Length: 376
Picture: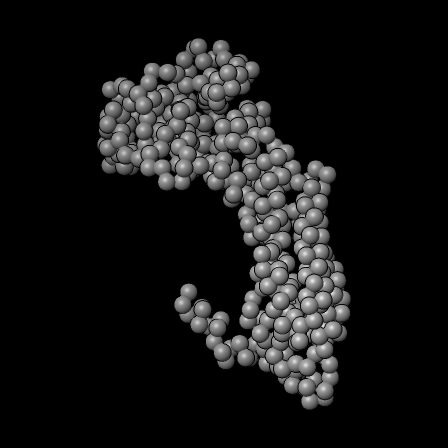
């Protein structure tokens, strides 16, 4: 980082980068040419345009998040979003999607959030509408600022440019170094500079509009300075930790929480847990297991049996309260429907399903989500 800073700010390097511009300035001075048009174009293209692009990249990301939160009710809370996702999975009934959800939790939700954003913005071309609103606002601000400074009659273009930048500083971040290079060695007429600057801003608007139209929707979302997918991830996914026995996501709030917990645990066979005696997937629930005399084996135990009751010796960051409550009908139904597929994917034997689980309907599975997420 230190070397990069030195390299970027080395006087000789910066002189080399600006040599052509200084050369043109010297020639113009020698020939006593007015530099108004060139200086105005340079200021618009080298200073204003990058600043406007950075502004749009940040502001558009924020606008997208606000739009999604407004249009999609299931994005308003983590609970709503998780219930929505599980309903979607149930509707699709695709074992590969369930596997992705269980084993690649973060990636699954990132793709789901991106898909929801894209779907929302495609409707009525929402992204173009948001871009237009921001674009019109910032270009109006620039034009207004130029007119305002022009009425103040600054004595030279250096004062003119710095006053414009000062007026726009709450919205645009314009590099001071670039400005210093522009205002050196010139005899530009201030009034003519203002005229040319307005024209250069109009040309800049056309160029920016073309660049905006050339990008696809996904490219725009992924290239934004403020990342809407990441912002929504932080709100909706949490820390991303999953129960080591069943894969249930941590529901603890706050970035600094020191203990993970989940209120709804799943049959452990969904996370490939199996009986060492029968090689069959198990239907045990974590909250029941930690209340029992059963043992578990994993790499963290050195592949040796360890009592579930003392699971915190292995997983000290997880809190799984002992409970005899069974899994929700939702996960029982999923286990029944995809028992064979999960066994094949995990290269083991299917679980012995309790007879009562086979009586659960798809409607009952969906209905149980409301109870699990506090809807009833």
